[in-house]
Image 1: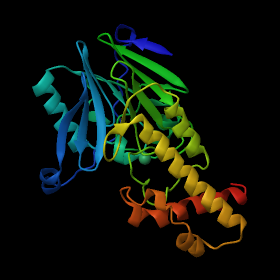
Image 2: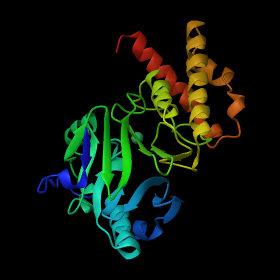
Image 3: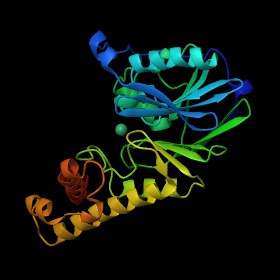
Length: 288
Ligand SMILES: [Zn+2]
């Protein structure tokens, strides 16, 4: 599916969900910033969460709103810095810590996500705007002569994650299933293994230079391969230990993954990562 700005049907905008109130104090304390990635592509920070936006002559394409307060801050900054409306809002996946607050942009933006993200946003009542347009595999958005390619990466961290490829900027925005020299978050809850490894391979197949994750530092394409290698190493080690009859506690002691000891969150999350993979393998063994 390929759409351009002049083909989008007006009047599709659906606003569902209410923003969750955050106290004024929390809002004041939020660490927010905008930094340039390359050309007209920028990164937006809200505490430990990041999204990206692309400025074009016909308006702005933005991604995860993060939450309503963050989205209101970004909307005001976009008005001040660029004086252009947000024409497209794209969710990387349904999880509420990235997708919340989309209603802030729904007055001017067409909201886009994967088919399964829309189903979960509705089913779980995520506090955000329901997508106007969904897709199953790939979708290319063109606006003001600029392009972003939306690519479904398959199951992994969730069942509805997409990678956003900005071909002119040679950048990829990839959230929660790829990070730069950092272990994945805690016990990998509700994720899919070994599908996660294949999801990163989808990113590796894209021709790009700059890797922009949803958390942590910006990196390069090789960081995606390193992250995939980490996931393979955890998976292989846990599978081998499970086949050898080791308990989860024994695995946490014996699986050191020392090659990654300099990565962020190695101390806090290594044993939780092992536990997460062990739980996924156990579920699969029970046929779930
Ligand atoms: Zn997530």
